[in-house]
Length: 309
Image (cartoon, rainbow, N blue to C red; front, side):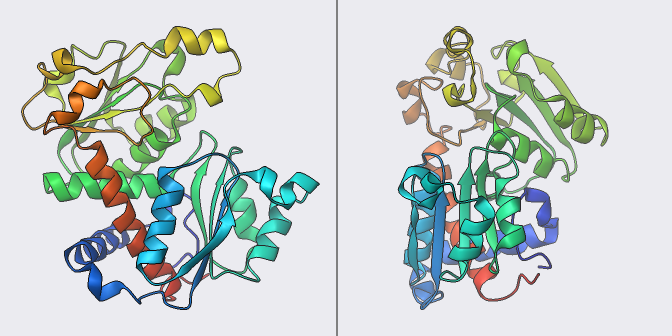
């Protein structure tokens, strides 16, 4: 792997992705073989906005590899509260840690950190822009449970405007043959123009935009649900108006094919009814489990010096 940082999914080639997926599956099969793979290594998690799954997943991954963690889970508990810049924080922390994992509400913040840090930086989500390790999780889940990342119809539903997981997933899947997209959202939450023009249109991908979920469920191989993100709205009235627009329940699941996979980056609010959890096609908690193993594979690969700047 040529680049020392992971800031967006396209930093990895398809071949490099396959290597990571293969390693993650080996770790899943025999985790006891990797309990000291990162012994003596230290990872810093710099989370400038709230997170449960992503932060815990990274920290659990490092601990299971025999490494240790330092960091903060909110900016107010760090020197950021005193006015320290991202660049200075990254420079300082890289004096102590072997790897930096950063989440930030502003787009491009991890890239600023990477330009100053002396150790690898992983983007754990920057605003509504990118979330590459969630994309690794999504791709591994689909590949492991479906057997392939090609020739499928993927429905992306909910907040496609601010949903960084959606933007990253579209970009990553655009490199696989025969992937067709169905973009399900109200007009106000459609994918941004740059995603449409620079990825979907530029690459000539097969996609369509719809405002109703029911009509397309029978044709989907994967349904990727997302929540309407309150924290991305400037107007609370708009959030209230749109937050319950798409709710997946048993009645809608009855319209879908027997092998359709339901994924969700989590957290869930109310866009997937709890009654759906018992459906064998509901794979979002299994998806979270895959997330830890793919992050273990990523951390190992980056810390063992295979990614060089």
